[in-house]
Image 1: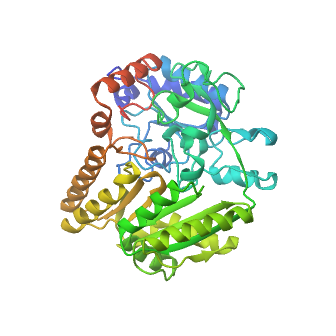
Image 2 (image 1 turned 30 degrees about the horizontal axis):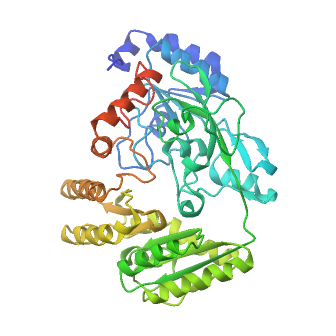
Image 3 (image 1 turned 135 degrees about the vertical axis):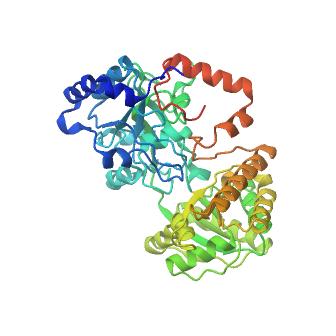
Length: 472
């Protein structure tokens, strides 16, 4: 490991005394902080991983400043940890080897909106809600929606997705170009500077090498995104089922008939119960689908008719409708608040969200086996999932001070991930690898593919300065 000395001894030898003034000359007096509270705030995300504060936090204001700061870090062998909104779920921002956190929230401009081309470029400080509110009067929107109001560049870095992925895809399908600062401070454009074609077959797909790289290959300083027309009409519905199998069978059949469903979310009985009490709702406590349809008024009628026929054939209840924006908002708020609803089941506890994804046909089996595993081991883990993609989350609620329970949860999550791998799935559908899934990634990819990844990392970051200790 090239970063062999600790920041501490380096500090004693006066190393920081040379570097801090250099940082300040780049991003100003108030663009650099050594304060303990600020460093701790930047050493953790929303995950259960313990806080690992960086030695310094810097706030660059432009790609040129990011590049200049990276050159200083490169020269002094200092690790670089990019930080967006800190809403990640896999410990991706912890400074395991100390070093410098690049907090990118001051780079918050929306650049180059091309309405007629359906694309826009944004800096890392722009969040998904921020972009959509900027687009409000254009008739366009960006549909990728993880639960948090995350940084769009951070979403690219973790290859995030959310409830709309079944219709609109994940970040992988919606990023057209990236501007990236590499470990040595050089600036690259993964599809060529300023380019934004809807498709390309030119050269290696560098854009998608960096999508999902979690800060280990470079700092994303700009992303060019695909936008969509706001649908003329939207309608949501809730439907309950006698069994998990019936709910998932309905999902598969709806997708097989070619209904362009926009969202199809599964919540198990435990999760619905938690959502009911957290949001003062009164849905029946049973396996449930939340659905949403987008299109013209006429096309919605057809989508809804076909879907209702399928769900009823599978023993589903009548649809409970949400047609106006306010009722729809309430319904999806309940789904997006699943994390907090689960936490409220056991006040004072912490939560960890698993994130496996399997081929659709394997979903009933893995959910049924997972629920049995939870019961058998006396664990609290309500299930919510993007069933249209085969991706689901167990929100594991546990007492961090109960060592025995912490171990049981850890063992459960390992079993769940291996169960997904045995069914030809992945250990992470949308949260990323971060700290906790590195061993699982090796099992999933196999040693040769991991070697190829390590080779790419060594080429782009030979000193191992970019977010060291993550992914690989």
